Image 1: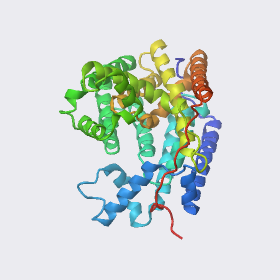
Image 2: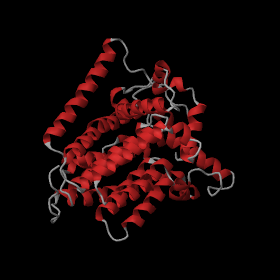
Image 3: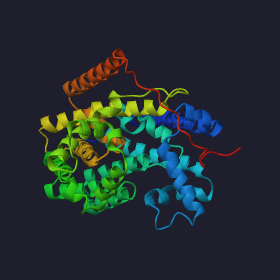
Image 4: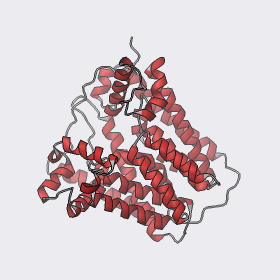
Length: 410
């Protein structure tokens, strides 16, 4: 990785172009919001509403009707603190909350990566180039606040002020309130970085080994660790054979709760979390264009191109404590952490996209070209190959939801 240039006076481009990217992101978000306000049924036919956003909205509706958001059984504490007040006025105000969060995230990325490290302005696609976030802007969601908290975490650990361990740990606690596994990962990362004195390669190696060990010992640890126990309970409720990795595990006779089977399944989930969104896109519904599918595909391409670049940088960089090397270490370790879950959840990688894209944009030209070539080759081979054997992506069935409360009623 090339050395980080010294900090200088920010060029005018570092202020104007990020604003242009932010304006484009907000315009796309506003179109998605207006479409749902004007014709929610039509937006369902075109795959615009995100089911997770609607389900969280429904949960908040039910809690509001049965005693308020501060009930003991409310499992969305972080979301309640962030979005719950809008239910006192109207849930449509969630859009303004998300807009403020995205503006803050854009500001941090611009200051930390474009101004400070002089990265190309286009690298802001890690923040503003993910269409899934634009579709999620309409209501309460986890991805946008987690994206912001991820950037705040990097700002804290990269500046390394005297109180950074406490500030980073508290940020991990805040993340825990939205997604417990990711929050535990950041708290553990804080301790590991403190012990290793920011030796990023050592951190990445140890973090990835720990994740592999947890996957191999999942059957034992699930009875001891509440986070793993809840994941196991959800897994047991589903027909594992209906899931892509579950079907493959059944075919190969793998037991995810045995050490060898658990490790093999972990390897499969690593592959699926990295590749599935990019290589198996769904573009249409039976009623129109499947915009969530397009958003997933673009997010999948970001993962497929940029995370391998992070791996290459970790393997080839001679720097010991570069902040961008730390980005690569955190992105790769987060990929391993997400894959510990018994479910394939590539969407959970979205909060570390700023790290991954920043590393890709700053990596040597050879690494960037190779990552792009490999991603393009695999994407073309899979998509074209499936069509040649008459296995084109299936049409998605439009979701069936009544109009959620964030839609302004006529």
